[in-house]
Amino acid sequence: MLAHRVSQGFTLVEMIITVAIAAIVLGLGVPGFQQLIRANRTVPEVNRLVTALSLARSEAVKRNATVAVCRASGSNCSLAPGVNWENGWVVFADNALRTER
Image (cartoon, rainbow, N blue to C red; front, side, top):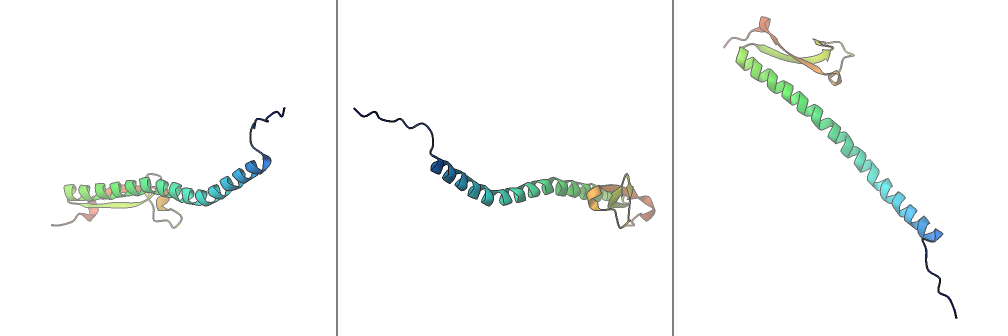
């Protein structure tokens, strides 16, 4: 009588094909996923800036004064070329530039 062999696992060829298909799928999917991650990091920062601009506008109306938003260097405004908006921003009311209505 012939004994039947029971299959236990994958053959080497099946495993190589599976790894190759997985590598192709990952190679196509990872760049798109990185773009999604970058976009998800940008949205909260944009929302923070829009909130700061809305605050400046509402305070200008409430105070009847000029309210500015500028690049931050610590807790102060900075016009220096090396200071970027990435460092944050400051919202402040400037009573010296009071608007007349």
